[in-house]
Length: 465
Image 1 (cartoon, rainbow, N blue to C red):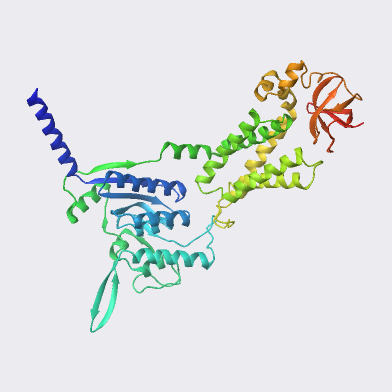
Image 2: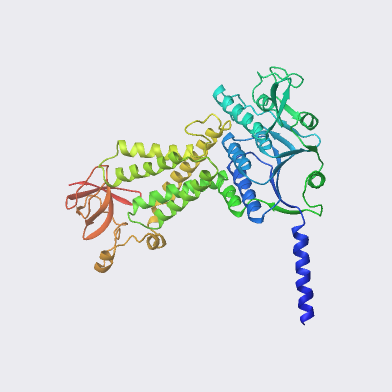
């Protein structure tokens, strides 16, 4: 037994030694638009590499670009990372993808791959004003410069030769820059694999990840044994965010928000409708916020809108400025949160995104209105709904009196007393029965004499007698 344990321990030590003598590579693929999801994925890969003491992070790119703000976030994380981060362009690294590639310590490209064309454009492909191009030029230039330079002294004159020429990085953005032997004025730099190799923007042409490993093992001090890979993929949270961002589901969540608010107004009190509306609002805004669509001010606009609507219904008599403003704020925030913007700047929003957002909210509103007209009265009067929202108060239960117990009777013209303030919804005692009532947009104080004048959506409509 003793000898057996000794052999096991020896084998474990050999295994650990062999494991330590392998090249550990954290591999992450970005084959999508550069957006918040891509930024989260790269950050996750860097954390994984740090925690596992990996030798290299390999970022495999096939992207036509995306948002500058997220590309810059990825760039900063790569430049601040202490261990090597290598880019493998397979097959495209355009626009924001080029910026990320230049930030990496080494660049490898597949035959037929391209990188460059980093002019900042909006969702329709139109070139944005120079203030955007100036910022992009500066971060492209600074990123290229960050990889260092050689100092050359010739005949007493000192010059510098950068490992990645900053002028080339700028020329990927600005077509006014001409570089002799590389690009003429009026054209944007976009390198093929061969051109990138020639001008110092690619270390090697490769056909696979294995070719990159072989190159590194030939040219660096990395172990020569077979490499060990850790693949970093999207998490369950990322997939949930993508699912919740589906237009059809967004429309369904909006309808739940509208229905929840509607039923909570009809049956005041913290109950099931309000809880459903709050949960739907969280599920609606959370993925949009994490993906950089919903800004803080848009979510705040929604909350203020709901508060204004509640004030108009329960506090302020009649229906006026607060109610209209609340509706505009609420609907506006739901639409704008679906549209990409940075600090009120919607220039980078994809073409038609605003119209699509408006359609999603409009269809949800239409569905809510149709449903309220067809089913609103029947749902609020059902025993199941009354149990969920607790429409009967404890006092009523003890007295054997139930709200709306006379809902089916003809009370037209009957006189009663306002049991609570009616703002314009409240309760009244009519023929010794307490029931939900509503006024015609006016405030009726508690104890006032009232008269039933009509019936609307499950409520007896009353006026001052």
